[in-house]
Picture 1: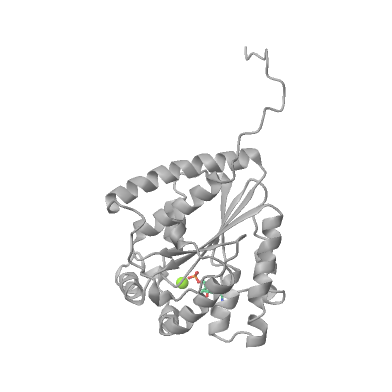
Picture 2: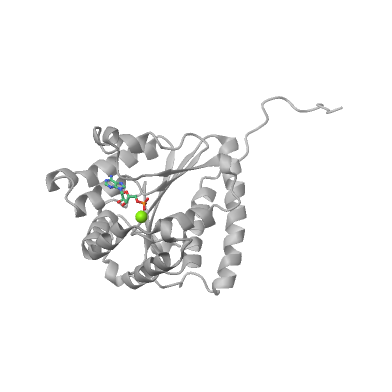
Length: 267
Ligand code: AMP
Ligand code: MG
């Protein structure tokens, strides 16, 4: 899945990317789902070891346009993983208390501790996405944030946090299909927000804002992955593979027993 990892010097133009593609997996959807089951198991084991070892902290950031599948990815990629070892933090419109602080205040509080995996459903990147597109702060303010975010993430990485950031990339046609499905399915209408239609009209502005995020904040210590997300099974696979690969790369092991267990018998 290295193909989807954004290098620090890359100049990403999203119109050159295909949200439909599935080129890093040779099988079909059924085979893809089977592969995901294997990744779920790997992830379960790796999470168990991460917790036991208590040395690393893992942060997974999910960003994407409305309906890009942030919730679905969490549900499917982490299926079978011990709920005690994983926490989800969702970032909504800031509260008055949150707005009274710097934009990283509410973010920092949710960071993983040793042995923990935290998934961000939206994140501090909203502060250079929705905030920029809607002019919620002046340009002089948001334009400084890319460097601030890189420095913040660097601090986290230096203090033992492994960071992976996924941009779930769907195209405008796919969003239309998904919004229409939400509108027509009584069990999905609760997710439909009329406001999303206004956001959809701002697609071009959001695309530009996302390109700047990808081009300015994919660092060696906190890389972005562009996940082709029109096909849900493939989206899950890309995230699952990248995560499992990264966790394997931590070369974790179970800690040695606390006590000397030679000659110990349970009677
Ligand atoms: P949802 O993810 O559908 O529950 O929606 C959450 C909403 O909160 C989205 O419309 C986000 O754009 C919005 N949101 C998240 N963070 C911020 C922020 N820092 N400033 C303004 N709006 C935000
Ligand atoms: Mg929404």
